[in-house]
Length: 419
Length: 139
Image 1 (tube, each protein chain N blue to C red):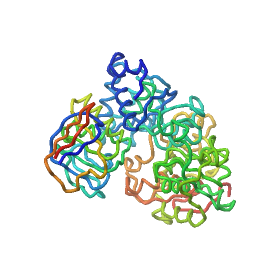
Image 2: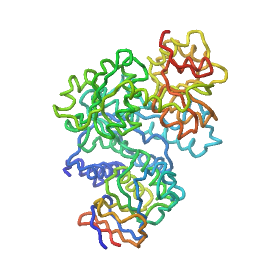
Image 3: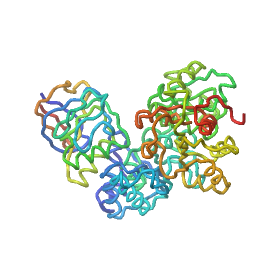
Image 4: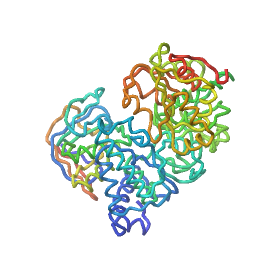
């Protein structure tokens, strides 16, 4: 392990105990992963601010008490709690979690983090990392998005390590931080009609197939000619859900893959999977536990909703309102919500009966609000996890179908946007 | 029997072996308040890690791992040592921070997959994981 003079001093404790402990964690991570050097970073998005028990809080208290300083701009991931909607997780029912999460959010603010409380911080233009920048990511969809869509370079860092890296401003030079580690070894070849390619559910399905096929490898998709940021967000989230994909290329779309040869470094893929209509259909089928009947809740915004997605909800809603028996929830970040408010959409959504929740994720909400029965979502990630975590039935479909079903109070499938 | 390995976190420990037949995600798989394995799909569900030298194949690390392992160590119901086949940075981060904050040591040693003791072995075992020279796991 090659350390610079400054890094040696930090490890020896010359710059305080917080810097020393953070450096110990980074060096241990480097040794475990076989890295022989560290590389400076320019940005971090951390999950350590998400309350996960006493250790997460004690560690943060230690950093604060020992005067830890951040080396780089650091954005916070979503929290366990929604400060703007305390009723969703009442302190009386969850005393340890709520007080712990509140204190943790306060500590990370005091340490100097930018309080984003979002799993999709890249939806804010300000501070968004760029092509070739070395950074730290933690939340799995954001790691995929930073690497694949923005061309910034990060491995997935767990709790404790992410904030340690932000403090010392270094990470082990290994994996996706290197040119070699970013080359695709797996290939997904699409053989779909133009109409099938336009299906808004397709990116979610492709993400699941990527995750299953590639595991933790880097895959490339060939044949997806257009993909917007919300589509790429859906691929990143689903690929990290069904597998452990931290980076993918979409040939002709993402910045490091103008051609297939750029994505693979000219090497033959180790594994190729053909995606045809039958595979899409069977993957879609596995995401819903029911496909008809009453809908008790509609959960949108996993990962956090974008301004464009809010625009689509507004367009589908028109003058309609959410059926009285349906709980409709959208989660998003404060920065996206501020833009929605500027457009005047907030009053439309509230009048229609949508509850907008900031800072947290909708996984946690149906249990906290007591929703049972059938929940509809446009997120493959949500559909994949929720039946296990929440013990509800799930219907996965497009955003348009979700809004149409929220209005009808029962499952409506096959609506086309604008139809 | 004596197994040589690589130190991932230094320390000494003695305890009975608990050999897991499959990788375990500590997050959702270990109850940090009791030290019991609670993943219902895991072959060793219901067994306790408390005071044991826990040997496990592979790794199913998640970002929640350090919090769960560290909490079990803080409450005194964690493993005495870990013997792993893959270097999982989240396990290492958990024991480093638990040691710094609570003074509880849980050495971690990496061994070859073919050197893992077989599941069901509960021999008394000694882990001596030094910083520089070759660490060993004895049983």
